[in-house]
Image 1 (cartoon, helix red, strand yellow):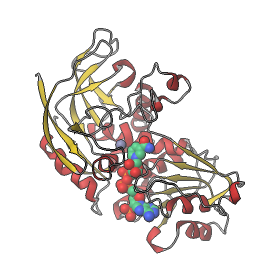
Image 2: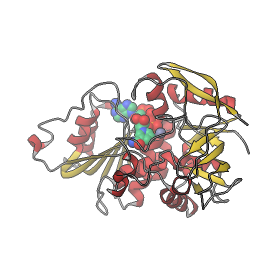
Image 3: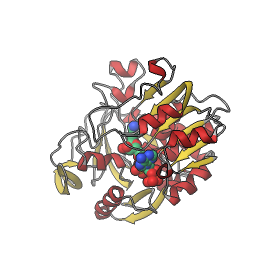
Image 4: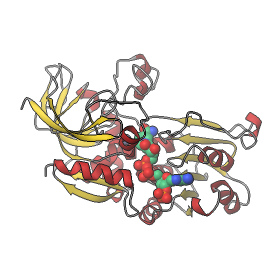
Length: 357
Ligand code: NDP
Ligand code: ZN
C-alpha cells in the first residue's frame, strides 16, 4: 500500500475524506493499521472552534488501537503483526522537557500531542508513530479493543486530573463535567483514596456511570451555581480538590475556585476555547492569598502509562468499557461517529468505530 484513505479536517469548519501517501518509517518509528478508533471532544474543538488554529487536509483522530504494519530498523520491542495500544500523546522522550518531567510538553508547549495536531492522526487506514519503543504498548489479549481504546486518552487524561488534584486520603473532591474525561477523573479520584466525590453534570447516562465509578453526590449545574450547591452539601466547608473536566469560561472557573477549601487544589483538564482569558475570581480566591493552587496538564502518553492503565482495567479497579455507548463498524463510519461527538445526544458518552475484528 503506497497511499491511504483518511477522514480529515479540510480546513476550519470543514471535514472530508482525503487520500494521502503512507508516511515513511524512520529507524525508530512504526506504521500502524488501526483496528478500533474513537473521536474525542478535542477533535470537535479543533475543527469547529479553531482552538489550535487552521489546518489543511489533516487526518483527524488520536485515540486508537491497532496492528503494527511496519517497524524501523532500530525498533527493539515491537514487530509486524503485534497488537498495540497507541497513546494519544507520543512525546519526544529525548527532549529536555521530558527530562524535566513534562513529556507531554516536549519540543514546545503541547508538543507531545502530534496526532491530529502537528501531523496526520489515526482516522485513516495507516498512521505513523514516532519512537515506537517508547510510544506503543502491547495490548494484552484479555483487554478488548473497546476497553483499550478508552485508556489512550480518556482514562489517561481524566486520571491525570485526579493525580494533579492532591487528593488527601478520605478527602472530598468535586468533578465538574462528567463526559468520558470527567468520569475517568471520578474513577481516578476513587482509586487515589477520595472520600466524598461530587460530580457535576446532567446527561442521565453519565450520571449512571458516575455513580458506578464512585461519585457519591450528583450536582445538576442547571439548577443553580455549582459552588453554592457544594457549600450547601458540605455545611459551608467546600471540598479539598476540584477537577475541571467540562463547563465554560464564563462560570466554571469561578465555581471551581469558590468550591475549594483554603489550601485546596483546582486541577484543570478541560481544553479551553471560546474566549482569550481565564477569569480567576479575586474574592473567592482569597484576594490571591487563599492558598488554593491551580494545576493543569495534557494527557500523559508513553508505554509505561498505557501498561499501568491496562493493569487497572485487567485487575478490575474500574471498567473502561462503561464509557462506550455507541459502536460502529467500518472505516467510513468515522464520519458519523465524529458528528455524534460534536452533537452530544443525551445517551452518548463515547462512540467507537471498529475497523477490523
Ligand atoms: P463532554 O462534552 O462529553 O463532557 C462535558 C461535561 O461538561 C458534560 O458532563 C457536561 O454536562 C458538562 N458541562 C457542560 N456545561 C457545563 C457547565 N456550564 N457547568 C458544568 N458542567 C458543564 O467532554 P469530554 O469528557 O469528552 O471532554 C472534556 C474536556 O476535556 C474537553 O474540553 C476535551 O477537549 C478535554 N480533553 C482534554 C485533554 C487533555 O489532555 N487535557 C485530553 C482529552 C480531552 P452534561 O452532562 O449536561 O452534558
Ligand atoms: Zn483527546
